[in-house]
Image 1 (cartoon, rainbow, N blue to C red):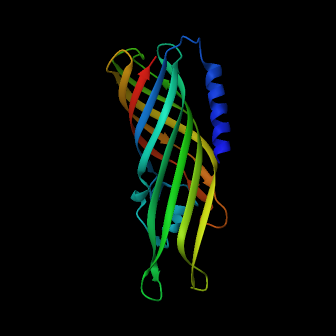
Image 2: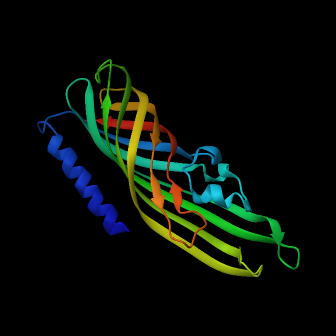
Image 3: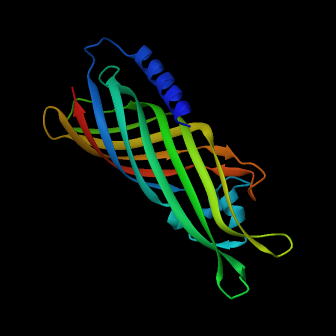
Length: 230
């Protein structure tokens, strides 16, 4: 997994570096803190494992809303454009129980559903008012590589109604578009603060170990941003 992350990161950075202008071009390093909200039950891709699990299990989709932290490096492509690359980390766990079945002693049949996504993104941002003003709204888009890991652990109901313990885990890399919008402001010659929204699209393929063949990786992020311009 880490080897794929490193290779993809180097490829994205190589592309971005190839687009970069002179070494004197203005650059910005940004730290990002906020939350990631995966798609809800009604808007997920057809065949999504969580939507299918929801037919048998009781769990709250809101439990998958979780902390997202990340960083971004960008450089100016003139007064109104910036290009850059970023990386983030999100993980959340949802407890689940079977809706219509219990153990022989009356206790719940319990599972733990866990999702992790580490997005690596290459994005171009457009600043309609310019990137040198005190108030800098922007929109943009690009491509994301999503390093994901999904697991279901706990007790499972077999076809003969017996109960067994197991752990099903799968990971991989998926790709999809990402859209960004936000605003940032200058608090000094070098320091920037702002808010950013991101929406990502992506789908992963799962093995037959899971009830659904797909895992929807899409969702919305809302981030506080803290930048340093040099």
